[in-house]
Image (cartoon, rainbow, N blue to C red):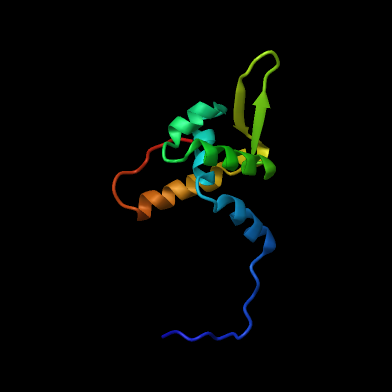
Length: 117
C-alpha cells in the first residue's frame, strides 16, 4: 500500500477548478463537441445531435455555457431564428477536444471516431 511522502497537500489551482465546474457538467462537453463539428446550430439541431439530453437540461446547459463565455446565443431581427455558436473562448477548446478524441481512440478500444474537427 503506497504511503504519502508529504503531509500537506498542494491546493488545486482555482482556475482549474472553475474550468471543470463548467466542463465537468454532464452534456457540456458534448454541446461544445457538436458546435465544433457542425458550427452554429439551432436548438433543435443540438437536441437531435444529443438525443439523451432532455430539452430542459439542454436549455440549462446552454445558459451555463453562455455565462462562461463559451457559447453565444445569436438572435436575428424580424425572425424567430436563434442560433448557438462558439465564442472565441469556446473555439479555443478545439485542440483540447482533439486530444480527448485521440485519448479515447487509444484507450477506449474499438474503432476510431475518425471525426475531423
